[in-house]
Length: 268
Image 1: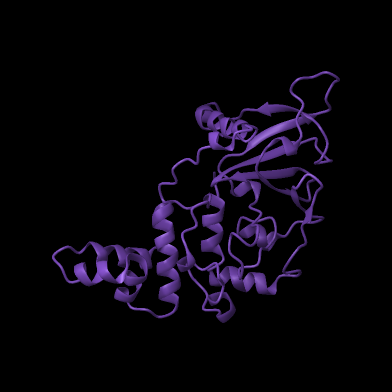
Image 2: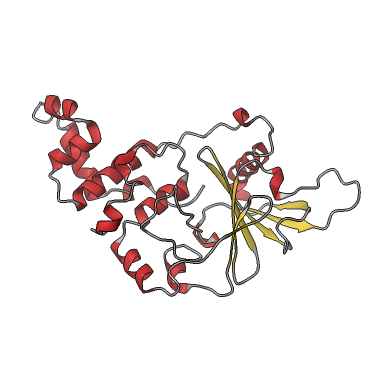
């Protein structure tokens, strides 16, 4: 993936070497690589507007409402451009529903009096980022502790209103994965946050190393210098010229193909 040598971007405190992003989900990782892509940065610079304002609803949900489509942003899998100078901790990349591998889809029905299944978005104890596209259909991404669940809601024009959810299941060959996504969503309603366990992100460590390798290579560092930034000077001093080729081979692979072999996508 191409990167950008941008002085302002290079000074961003969210760069990969500043600490392990332990609570990143797939969308966060995908954004970290995308914002380093030179072609994306060029498209963002030429976009009008470069930034769209979000509002925070009274229940804490952050909302981006779009009156039209942004086709250039959709080319990158986003509803609208996000500022590439900001890392995943400082901005929200609103991934388009078409870029997500799995989405919980439900219809919001007006509740009847006395119904037990009535919900509000505030019942889900997680960060909530919502986007309403030009089609008027809200996509709400709920996130906590590196776990995220995107929810597309039909028939829900007022996001702070109470509703009765009617969940939809699609594709019989994918029922197990859909059921797991629903279980994650249900766990967001648990009062005890400790019950929400982060699923192992098998590629997390490698992706963090890949970001460091990408940032260091953009600065013109050698393979050895990049390896020191990733593995530490002591380990590199002891093993770089040893019989094992592990550090050198791993560093070369990280520089040559930072995200491709991990199957990186904003999917949950």
